[in-house]
Image (cartoon, rainbow, N blue to C red; front, top):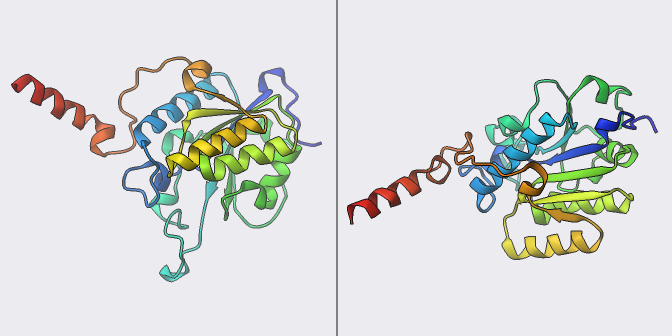
Length: 234
């Protein structure tokens, strides 16, 4: 196996799944539920991983434009919504396109803090390069965050578990579109062997109130300010 993590401090891997603007911002074409809370937890986990020198593998969904004829209207190649949230990106990173190839540099974990892999599908294991990387990679724990619980996060977790990997899902750093489907997805991941924990157990408590990327009223705290002013006027 050419992709083993041989240094003891690199036995954990953070799997950052589809943390893109279309999924996580209020004006995105496929925004998750309760995006402010999920964004805050994602930011906390990413900061923790950097402080602990834990390498990050990121997936990013991408779909062709096809002159507007595509039935998928989110994460379209070249659009702002397809881009990743800025604080999920490390300066020292390498990116790979979704091109059906499996080639990977032998020493990339020694050279880069983050590996970004694009995919044309929900399940990352349907993309040959991602399948190879996650299948061959040796680590004690794979820690999952991102979107969505009922989609790519579940597919990633189940694929890793099928390959006998130890999986931890940070449940409050995972977004969803359908709450009922997300509950079932979490149950299935846990039943198959994944460990579900919250951000505070992994990275401590954060007092972050603004997520610093989304400009909706909820993320800017305008709703709370309006309610506070209203209460004071009573």
